[in-house]
Length: 266
Length: 153
Length: 106
Image 1 (spheres, one colour):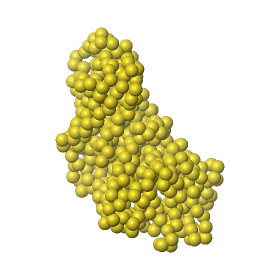
Image 2: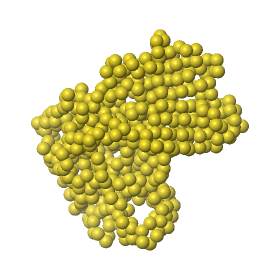
Image 3: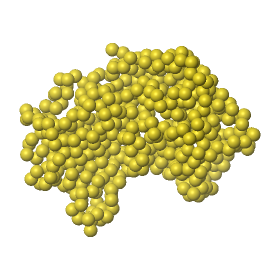
Image 4: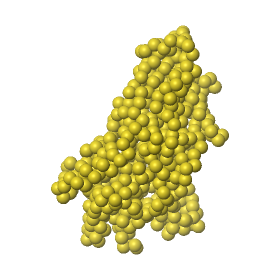
């Protein structure tokens, strides 16, 4: 969103990616559990400070809005989230840390946004909130904030396995005009620089988060769409099954790491 | 000169009315514009180096949000205090960034904010003291750009 | 809708210099961006911030498009008397937000 002039070669990203493609890296091995680091550790100290100070974390406005939405009566039933779930600080503790989670009725995993909209349509008899809308981001951020500091815990069992494997397949599949797989940057070359920025390991430990590039809060799916556009792939639509499976895999890959919502990232 | 970001031809879903914006053709402040902006604040007075401390990281994660602090050594008494601090960025489309106006009641002459920097450049801070003197300090900042965006580069 | 957040200590000793952190929600549209169809998105920024302590201005700021979205301003003031500190942001398109905080000086 800043007004930037040129000053950098336009195709440096393409050139860097071509290099990665040509170099026959060893088939992606997953990052060893003890070597996993949050994107927080790849940021400058100044950006970390933005995340750490609750008073001036720019995501605070979405948290305040989320709290208001939590308490607002809505839908044909005229009920607020609080009417069933009480104080979110208690009832929502741990919820975001274990999503995507199994939805028995749908017989597949759903992410937190889908869970919220399911509640809205089925329990509150209200219209679902649009992906990336201010309200959905605020409510998701507020709920996820209640899991801050808790370890990500994704159930790994027989019914989840096909979806987890589908997510892993997406993560390791070459895509787009640049013919790159997520794993090539984020498993094989994390820590190295791409266009001046450090490549993180791609653990979704802080979503929804305030991305400096967006100058606002956004979801994991928005960030993944940015990645896909970056490798010149057609991005999946918001809410696509592929995204939920990818989210499931990424969260499982980050199991045990602490949730940081609302994180700040470049 | 083409800018770093081009227009994205509509493709795929743009959920939530997301407007994809580009800074194509954005201007950059000329050195003359920068000097004029400074002159408006300082007049013909001499600007001395010192007393001003600019705290900004030398390498920036993202030019959209750059934490910046400016502090000026001063007893901040009614007789001797900082009246104003002005911040300039030479390579932004506009040179002015921020002006703050203080007084003895501030207790300390220090402000913290977050600014936008369009490119690698020098940030300048100029402080005006109650005795009419002007002091300045500069900081060189390297601005990196994000690799994965919402637009095709 | 949350508009501004202000953080300062509530009880302070007389003469102590306190730090006040303020954050206002605003996109700070620079006026340099264009939509994907080429139209300029008009400038829309917070232009001015004033902090008044029991009615007397103690800090003022003029903001330009180079201030990042959701502007943060952290500054200090001396605790003189108990009372009210007000924070007023004004900007383009009639933008106006005021917050106030009670301060107890012992």
